[in-house]
Image (cartoon, rainbow, N blue to C red; front, top):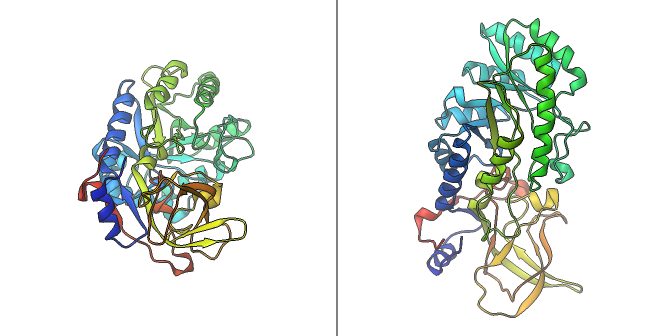
Length: 390
């Protein structure tokens, strides 16, 4: 997405910071993901933790996605947004009793379970409600995602999932649980995965685990392989839609299914990350002894990823008209030294009130915003409100 002069003029008239959503890009991404998945009969769930903006959810639902939720609040939000309960999956390593009861009250499709004790608790609560809960066991495949350590989830040292060494005990508990029905197995190895060989390795491991279930005469209706497909944060204008074609083809080639078995995916970042930018304004340009500081009115309260993961987001000065460059540490207003978007970033000479665009903020941007320092949470703006050049 390239911002037009009309768009910039509109931005100048608005109070910053705000999130700007390119609804056309979102539509294009959803269409591509769904069409590539449909080639193989794959079932897609949108990982709501990435973004729960109402307009985003409306678009996702309209394209036939289900919902992948990690809290009772997300389950309720999905239902309120129009997702059918039989499209809703509830994952998460720490589901509270109240959250489980919320999901049971809606008769959701499936709980992705991550421990023996969780299965026992769901069985007890389902019995209390006179229901049978469908579950998938999240298995830790011990497959590296080759991603940032903070967003790796499939190794044995991570808190997620059940290890294969526990699976005999898991099956014993399920067999003794009259209000539990095992319908699938679930995997998720991490997030922002750009090395697709990680998914090939996951397929090989899932095939081995399937054989383990077959040997014990346990039939599984589906395999949920999670999500985690990464995006190109460095070249968001060129690669604005993730490579869903190659992604789904990996599973079609290497995942061995049993007759009638379905494959489910849980995609979040790759669906929404590129469709939004954080728009901020320069408050001050401060000359330091060793660097220049570009101080914005947006900070970690609007986009925490650079502070939390040392994540890169491309930054543009939309107001700059010259070609002379200067080096800036681009920082926010929050009283934390980590409130920094970039260090030593070469940008055109910048001044107070310039409009700054921080790209690829559609995932883990607005949804993770806070009012720390009692900062005001700002509105979202959508491309179909004003003209934009794609």
